[in-house]
Image (tube, rainbow, N blue to C red):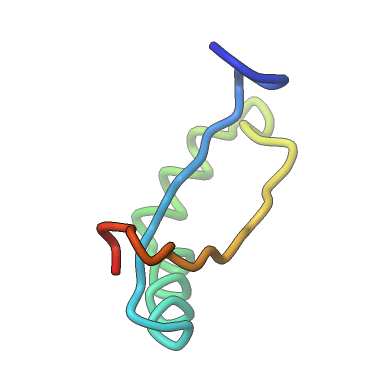
Length: 65
């Protein structure tokens, strides 16, 4: 609704550390159910045209700390 790209979708995920991130992300992208769902949803072409990853650090006042 606001900003330069109203079709932008952002996921904010939390991990203990980068090792946990890698382990869980690898498990997610290799999950057969997810792969099947992704493939079926993209029968008529890809749903996305760009993916960007960012690793953020919580501020001192963040509830995530």
